[in-house]
Amino acid sequence: MSRWMRTVGLLLVASLLVTLVVGCRPAARPFPSRTIEGVIAWGAGGGTDVSSRLLASIAEAKLGQSITMTNRTGGTGAIATQYVHDRPADGYTVMFHAENPQLYQVLGLSTLTYADFEPIILTVQGPTVIVVHPDSPIQTYEQLIEPAKAKPGRVNLGISGVGGQPYVTAQILNSVEGITFNQVAFDGDGPLATALLGKHIDVTGLALLAAVPQVQGGTLRALAVVANAPLDVLPGVPAIGVLRPAARSMLTTAGFFYGVHVRKGTPQPVVDKLREAFVAAYNDPKFVQFARERGLVLLGHTGQAARDYMAQWQRHMAWLIYDAGGAKESPQKFNIARP
Image (cartoon, rainbow, N blue to C red):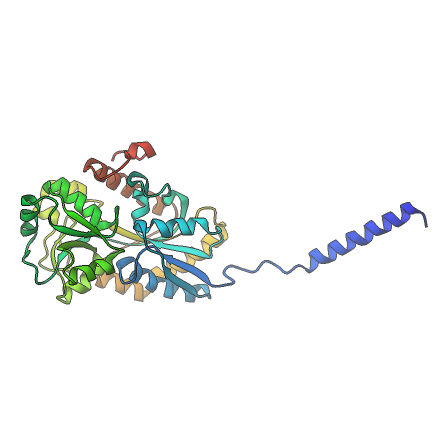
């Protein structure tokens, strides 16, 4: 046999082996084929944490896989946001977060925003509630404003970091009332409530979900809702928009929202699978009842509707904070149009 024929024979054998190997390769396993990591950007016991854990517990049954939930706190959620962004865009790392990334750029916390993520679903929305210890001498909203005006920077207000809802509330009060606080940072609603119960701070703003059980149980006193209208779940608690009608325009989009997100670039079939499961969880009677009992507004936004909602919120709140002197950068630098 000539060398040429032996070479041709070897090439044919190699080709056959490659064909056999490729033909025997197992098909790609459908998503999800292993446990999903759920990353909560805030501490245990807060609104984002409680809402996210309930939602995930329902969604994992729809997915047929476990979702292991962990809290990654710090930087007003920027630590968790960066962590999820650094993970592969394969759907196995899911972020449970609030509105905060839409303010990161103007506050100098991170270059990331929700433009770097794919929204799976935005679930609920609600206002912040200004609360004090039940034994506090501060009995009303007016009694909070008076000493804060008399002694600028002396009233201790707990915040969940620069850009969190208590921080935003402080900026709103600065715009509406011309007052400033001594801001003391904690890692979310849970630690804020603990600090207030321990009388380590004078006042704070809690997300509605975290505030309602405490106020209804008498462990905290609510002074006002940072919204345009009072809430049925907090009877007798006034709304700032009623107390100060001139503030109504800035309160239209004030408040928090919660959502589920994955890194941008995640394959569309994976996004679709996650979205199907989390939309089903959002519509589950257990989650709907949970939201309504706490006075939350059900959103249910996905895809472009979610992106539009977040962009509108960003325009209003980024400029409000900038105009109040609380931003490091102008929203204009990041092409955030003034509303």
